[in-house]
Image 1 (cartoon, helix red, strand yellow):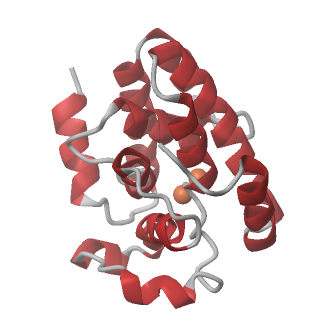
Image 2 (image 1 turned 120 degrees about the vertical axis):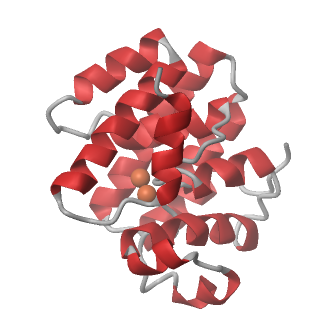
Length: 185
Ligand SMILES: [Fe+2]
Ligand SMILES: [Fe+2]
């Protein structure tokens, strides 16, 4: 995989384009993704790149100019917090010239998941949920599960997310449900 930007250049962009808390979260996700990639034999560069860029589209105001490149499904249209997934992948392509399909997939799937998760997809999903700045009850359980088994960690993170959405009385994206039904054992 070749990428014309260094890690530091990407970080500089993110620092300028994300709120400070989101930038800190991004560094946490990147660090945890790298750890998990080492543990599970996943390409380290891809893990770092996907970790860094997963929330690149998070600031919807700043990402406005990329709206025209994404097509939201009917559920995504109703769930604003999901817009940044596809936006992040567009920014990875347009701003940083990322062509790697595995990296773009992990960025796109990092909040809904789906019924076909690669090891890298699972890593980014878990790290997004359980990086070191996350404090919610049960986060340690996700971290422990992820050390034992990648799919176990993914399912633990997915369960937490689905519960959270349910408790908030919000719409669950069908991809999250199909991920659950595929990976629960
Ligand atoms: Fe995100
Ligand atoms: Fe995130």
